[in-house]
Image 1: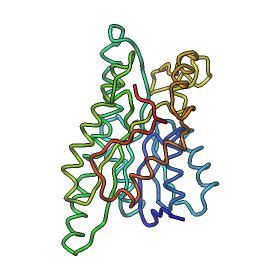
Image 2: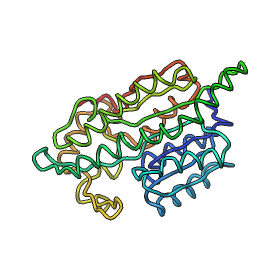
Image 3: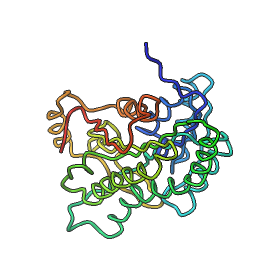
Image 4: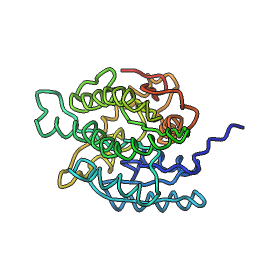
Length: 279
């Protein structure tokens, strides 16, 4: 049986406190990676770390709570990963949320918030990592070593095909595709692959029925209403060729592929993980 090993690798996963981010951090830890989990919700972050630690023997886990969209925080995250683990091999830009409205009801604040979390924050985190990645790779190449490193950015089928009521979200998710393809061309010389996974309808609090207790989330001092109308969710689910919503674990496995040696000659690509559905 093929075994994926990330032993000796270290990773950053943003938005790791719950849902898909939690599942990504867990599969990376299960594969042997040391993982720095970061999230705006410190309580959820600590619960995720405890859950992963109890399920994964000898997992090397660190956490740092904070707002990934805040100026200077991406640099802090990168610095902590390098300080704690001595290296940085995998970056998963997963943090995100939805704040939906039809375009005529979308405020400037709302639209900018979607760009900030979905493309500005990943840009800043990658920019913060660039000096260490470049200098380390140059030394390795001069020594005749080939060490592959990985970036996985999370996008959405909304960013690929658009979705009514999501002008800000879709714009941010589309922009991260452009960021992915550009950095893939810039960082190939440093043995860094840069890819994206576009999720379809994954069963998280962002897609739960609107009457769920989880559909109000705190972003700083702001309360954002997320979720889907139950009938819309049911209708979309019926159009999924595989016949069901994806689980966070389904989503995490697609990310694991891009973090693993299996994808060492794949870069600048977008993998759709949606059970066959496309908007």
